[in-house]
Image (tube, rainbow, N blue to C red; front, side):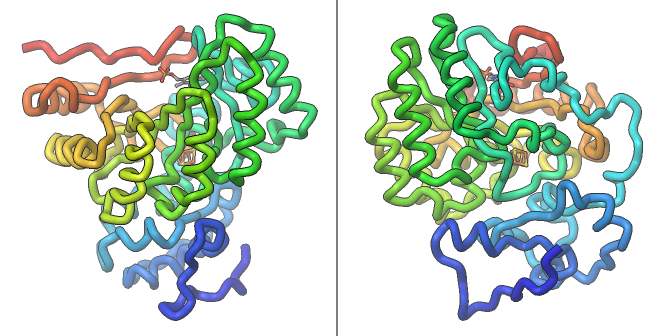
Length: 342
Ligand SMILES: *Cc1c(COP(=O)(O)O)cnc(C)c1O
Ligand code: SF4
């Protein structure tokens, strides 16, 4: 780890999204002292999480309440000793993704759409991430592998949508994204390009003129699916970034993960749906946590989940209720969780 990294000071704020990415917090003690939280970081935690270390960019850190160790944004990203517990049923590859990769970096599980692992890196490390153990190294793409992936898509005429995922696809440069879409545009049966990203909420500066140019130039129909779990993740700067995307008529959807002590409360989820809608974002999925090793402390009882969802359904207009789904390895789609009974 890079302990020589300078502490960010008010006079040298990073400005471009690339600078912000470069200056992420990666040292737990430095990060906690920025947050004015006095909390001893256990030594063994750093070693145990070295493959998936702390990583937080400044714009996200600024939305965390100072001095609050239970802040719902902080709990999503702070490594905890509980990650080291071995919980039954929690595995490295809960979705059996390693077997659904027809080509390196390509996941084809559902009819009509394929998911491309565009990059292995993310701007932020979410502790509950179901891909936290994904063998990205063996999915690192050479130009040749990319071209083999485009061949796969070209040969399967049932595919009409390509999902750029990761990691976070918006971690890639605009040039790289332009190249990918250029290749996809040459394939007649591809109509839609979907982007699964946390960037607009994590580093809103990413929605800059270069990105907007790329999105307006492609002739594919673009859909962006954000990932936001709590209304506090959306501040004015994020709202402005989202407005730029709405202005160019890109449909914006959001997926959230149900997380213990973070958003396992109907008031929090209702506030999230309302806040998203105010920013032009339609709630899409509410995911039951995938049973990934190291994330058991975010899990909720099934009864609690169903009760929570019942409260959402009873208190929101139908269009603000995300679909509650669970992923079951081998299923042909995300599986709806049974609706509440009255
Ligand atoms: C979630 C997922 C999709 C997208 O599913 P939708 O229901 O269309 O949002 C596609 N491919 C893979 C591998 C997925 O995990
Ligand atoms: S941004 Fe998405 S892929 Fe990256 S760590 Fe978070 S949940 Fe995982």
